[in-house]
Length: 88
Image (cartoon, rainbow, N blue to C red; front, top):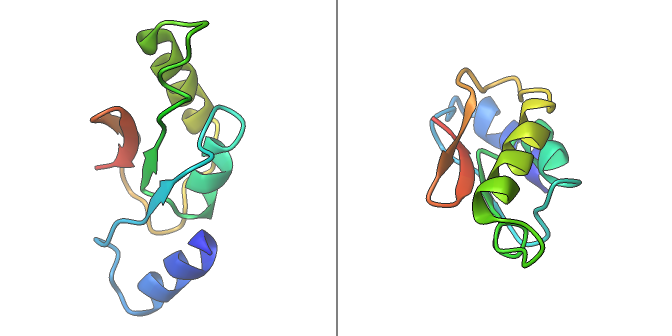
């Protein structure tokens, strides 16, 4: 769905429109979401994990996101925003 939405936006020259993914985002899925074209990733339980600190969880998400290939329309690196990840 994300890849299709990203393609539709690119075809209409709407590169500034964000695609948000909410649900199921964690270290193992965030790279796939970003590669597909997600520009905002909402990560709740992946950030507020009782076994690790919030900063540790965010660092792990950032590291996993950096390993993702940027979608063709993205020109900025992923950054943290309000606990989630987004492209600026």
